[in-house]
Amino acid sequence: MMLDAVTLSKKQRSKAVKQDKAETKYWKPWRTSWNILSLAAVIAAYVENQLVPSQELVNNGAYKWFLIAYFIYLVAVYVIGAVVHGRIRVYGGHFAQLNAVLGLLLIGQDLLTEKFAVIKLPFFVSFAQILDQIKTDQKLLIESTWSSLGLWLISFIIGTLIGVVLGLFMGRYRQFNYWSFPFLKVIGIIPAAAWMPLTMVIFPTSYMAEIFLIAFAVWFPVAFMTIGGVQSISMDYFESAKTLGFSEFQILRKVVIPGALPNIFIGIFTAMGLSFTMLVISEMIGAKVGLGWYINWAKGVGNYTQVYAAIVIMAVLFSVIFSFLNKLQEYALRWRQRSN
Image (cartoon, rainbow, N blue to C red; front, side, top):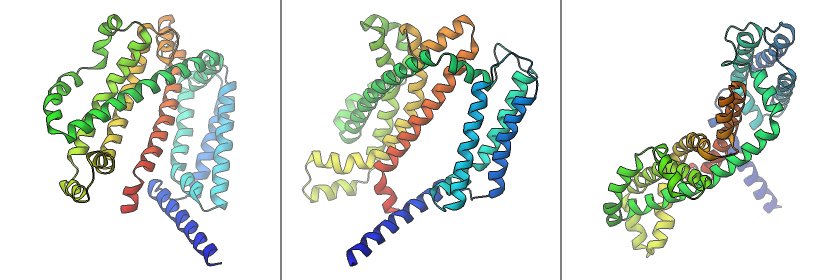
């Protein structure tokens, strides 16, 4: 009986900690008025799109279903949040204002492009046109997305590992830093794109050249931030570890890496944006599939709707990866949250 009470108490404490963590991250309070306003904004966007005559020929089918799905999602979040006072309520309350503004932005962009043609084709297109283009080219875009994701993942992991290892050794060992840091300063500041002509000669395939260029864009910020993280660790920790009889490997594993992790993640997040930029550029040099290739091909034929379609997919992909890395960071640095 006591064991059940202790287990229940632990679960309650864990639930309370998660709730407090969610309220800290999503700090805007629940406001029913904002929830209603965001729903009204999405309804208004749907009504506007269906009733206002279009100046441009656009298939609004995909956009209509997007608005319906968005409305259903908001209703589900708000209903659950109103009934269950948990993390969904915190999440829904925090983003209600953004959802309302997003609904108004959808109305504005639709009126300015498709409906009144204030900003015109081919350079400016409505979100409805972008969604219709994604639907039309879905097979090619799915293939390109998977190709780009695979290329980015391989390159990003290689660049991150090189950066972390170099940063740990350069931050920990003065002799290694003495010989390596001058090369880091000279080579690291060179933009990865500057190596493009040389990579086409050195590497036997364009795919290997793309991996090198993206990894090169990643390793420098990761290495630089890792060095700073290692060097910021208090010497008291090293002295305590030596007193306890830690080997050098144990010092690296239990002192250096945990102490440098916050800086390592800063370097990773910085490198992430650079890697996506280099992904697009590198896929333009010799790839036969991929989002960068798709953008270059669409630009060549003058179809800017396809360019925007690829950009939207890249934005969604970037957001998903960013969220995953953010969760990974929270898990890896959970010791810091406990100490706070």
